[in-house]
Image (cartoon, rainbow, N blue to C red; front, side):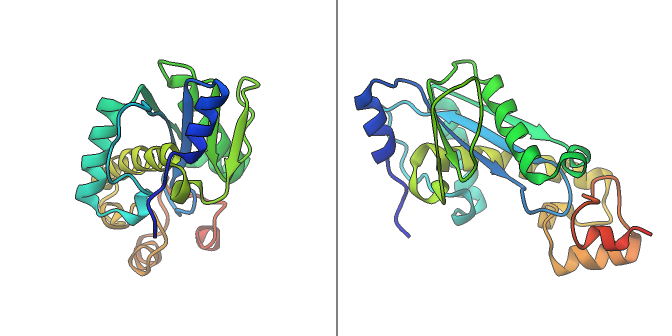
Length: 203
């Protein structure tokens, strides 16, 4: 799998755009916990080696890159939307809300957005939604790293509040162990009640 590149960003810089934000999420498919999005504006003059889709990185490398991106980016921010809102609005609307929340938190507002897969209406800003953007586009891959590290750390903390479920191991995703723990203890307030198989456990 090749590393993501800056082709899209370079073309936009040449067109006159200056602050290009990559946007991606973590936790879309999980059974429990929030969905988290990150927005990152990279500095075109600074090359950070090793950035790729967060799912392809081992945890130590992901954490190392997370710190590098945060210290060397022009701006970065995260947005988090709770499992309750996911159940109320559906995962796609919650995903968009998380991305909008991340963009609002940026201390430097972008003039162009590069988004993984989803269309996004934000401040009437021009954007491209790119399928598998986290594999192809470096700023989207950087956002995927920030979002995943933030969400993983959040799920580790929530594991202390709900120790029966093993959130520290599976981060709320659908594993055999997670299913077994739900079978044994029932669901908790972190579970997404609109998701299968969680809704099957609700009487």
